[in-house]
Image (cartoon, rainbow, N blue to C red):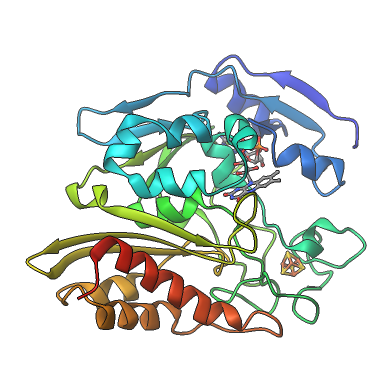
Length: 326
Ligand SMILES: Cc1cc2nc3c(=O)[nH]c(=O)nc-3n(C[C@H](O)[C@H](O)[C@H](O)COP(=O)(O)OP(=O)(O)OC[C@H]3O[C@@H](n4cnc5c(N)ncnc54)[C@H](O)[C@@H]3O)c2cc1C
Ligand code: SF4
């Protein structure tokens, strides 16, 4: 690990000013420290934000649920408001990592976690995300775990988070604060596609800190579910996952939310799949049509073609569990 300066911010403005001067936030440290030990991240200065009063889950006057950036993944998953109104979020978090990691990991850190592409972690190999312009080792190499949606000729790394897939389906908004004031970023705009600049992964501007994530309470989101397919039953990232919510009245789907994980270069909400469901009977044929729509445009690489069928089946199974199949 390279030497670095360490400071502990006592207030959000102080954290912003330390970050504007070149510091890098650290929350649970479960991703950043690993990357520093491997010389993938080399921040000269770390700003510990754990003292900030950003660790509450609360209902706002407009009825939205606000989740402070420092809320631990485990506290979020087991919070009564989340379990009641957004079971998909609770299930997604509990499908990830391990109990110990979830006890340390923060909401903001989870949003910002970096890919698990094996070549990103191995500094012996070229990687455009780690070193822009050096090349992508995964495209010609081993790419079984890599993405099939949102890829580019520069990078095909998946976004690894389970929590983010649920938040994409729930249509979360992200509150940030920076040197120029506060901003609200819709979830769909927070993570960036790799395009020609895979090292740019999110929409935060220099010095900006995530302060909270906000969720709108809609009755049908209480009927939601997360399903994750992976090589091992625990402590493993998704090969494919689906976050789904359905509003079914009289056997007809009135509203739907669909997002996929393990297959996209960012948490992958599929509006096309949602449109394929709305107004249709809640049955297997409808779910299969939605899966078809969700994976339209998927691009398979040498080792990961199986993910197209796996993602479709994962989505159909999640929808069947939630909506039943006539
Ligand atoms: C062995 C292992 C298995 C795992 N398995 C899974 C899994 O199956 N599914 C899954 O979803 N995740 C998994 N994870 C990832 C885990 O969820 C993340 O490491 C964790 O969520 C990161 O949170 P943190 O608070 O520790 O972030 P940190 O490591 O502290 O920070 C991560 C990044 O976020 C930035 N950051 C933190 N807070 C803020 C903020 N408020 N504003 C702006 N930037 C901020 C930091 O600067 C840093 O760049 C796994 C991790 C490990 C080590
Ligand atoms: S897929 Fe992305 S992260 Fe993986 S080697 Fe290629 S450029 Fe690097």
